[in-house]
Image 1: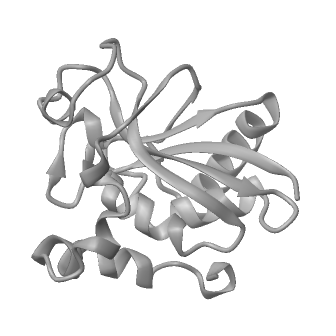
Image 2 (image 1 turned 45 degrees about the horizontal axis):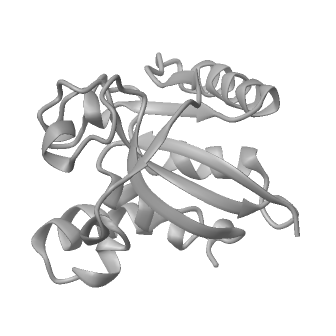
Length: 172
């Protein structure tokens, strides 16, 4: 097993975390914050939109089972990378589409896939591709949110459909 880390933001971290929890080769997922200028932000701080952080999921994956490119394909298939600072009714810079790369290879994969998706869809993708610096885990009540709050309306109306968008070849 070869473990690597990926950090991705594509709207509410409850959605992103749930999708990747069901993705083959993903060993662990942690919801949190990255890309901002405030140390140790709280959920309230980030939701206020003034910390510069995005809600993200940092995952550990087995690159012998799933490639980083595969994870990016899942990422782009399960959120809208053409809307700036918005995913559905979640609005603000904390919900932006962003890839925090951990290596030059991850950066190249992200930029290459974005260019290909723009060519194929003829749409401009607003996804940021920036170097990873610091990750702040969210509080425990934000971890594994979908599985512990399945009956909540947000989970049934927003999160569950994201999981259903997961390309079947990537399901655990």
